Length: 207
Figure 1 (tube, helix red, strand yellow):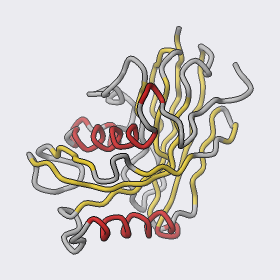
Figure 2 (cartoon, helix red, strand yellow; figure 1 turned 90 degrees about the vertical axis):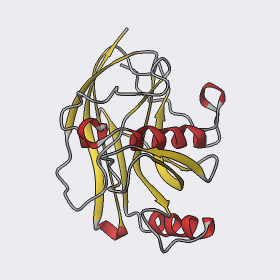
Figure 3 (tube, one colour; figure 1 turned 60 degrees about the vertical axis):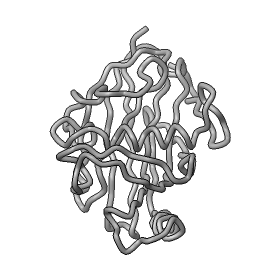
C-alpha cells in the first residue's frame, strides 16, 4: 500500500477535460438516476455503478444528499486498480426550478457561493490519512441536467433544467491504491453545521 494518495488538483485536466467539467458530469449523473436506484440513497453500495458516464477511467461516488441526519451509510464496493475515483466531500447546486425566487444566473451563483461560505467541515480520510479536498466550480458554469420522474430533487420529472454548482471534491488518480482493502471516510457540513453529508466506503481494489 502506498504511503501517499495522489489526487488531481483543481487546475488539472484529467483524461483531457477540466476538473470542473468532471464535477458537472457528476451532477448530471447523480440527478439523472431515479430515487429507487439512486446511489446517494443507497445504504450498501449495490447501486454505485449505475449509469456511470466513464466507468472505464473514472468511478463517481457520493455521500448522501445533505440533511440533518449524521448517521452516514457504509458502502462496500469493488474497483479496478487503474480506475480513478471522483467524489464530493460536500457540494452545492442551485437551479431556478427548485428555487423559483432565484431569477437570474447571478442569483444562482450567489446562492451557491453563500452555501459554500457556510461550510464548516470538509473532512476526508483514506486509511486514516487525511486528504485535502479541492474547491471546484462547475464547467461550464451554467449546465444542463436531465431530471427523471421520481427524482431526488422532488420536482416535476422529464425535464431539463439549468444549474450552477461548486463544491469540495477529491479526485484520486487511478493506480495509486494498491490491490486489497482500503477505507474511505468523508464528511462535510454546511449552513454552519445544520446540514451534513458523508459516507464510508469499504473499497476492495483489484488488478
